[in-house]
Image (cartoon, rainbow, N blue to C red; front, top):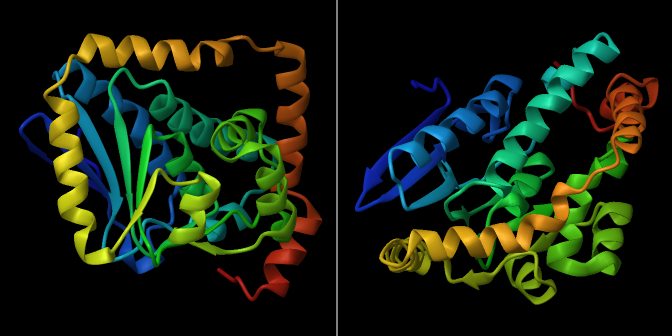
Length: 252
């Protein structure tokens, strides 16, 4: 499949999947969210051993496209976007092969959630992380919060979400949000070496390890999920969201 915004290159069983929308700081549009699950599926079928996910031109990503979100007119529109985001995150989290996030620059909002769905996160020490949903008045689903809680525990999950604070790569490593924080000039080489080392190992062992670690997430309460979806959709089209965007100076 040809991506308009997403590019990838393959080498020795390792695929680099680049979010390539530098004019918007690699913010993810609905089209881009929708492209991710098919990409994961195609690479799994091709026998790819490891995927590296990165952003172009020095930024991992600015999150979901807020200008696009501002244009949402109905709960139906919001539900379609929410489904695209959840499908992308779940496709990475449950992918049958390892996914490594290589993070430089900004890793904000939905892009930080995208990184948290990956198996391993390698970041530059000067990378910047934030999930400022509370500043915008929009709601996260249980899956996003569960993945954060797995990495950093409930206390830091609350602090990041409640305060909408920004932390650097070094702090992100200390709290567990990233696996390792590395000097920026060493990040590319270190990530490649780790990906190639993983690619040499047993795909079946890796797959079964991932399945064991993810199995608890397969149990869901459908009624609770339905109720939460209504809350999330309403937050995307709420007057509070529009007002908070305006106060932050975000315009179309």
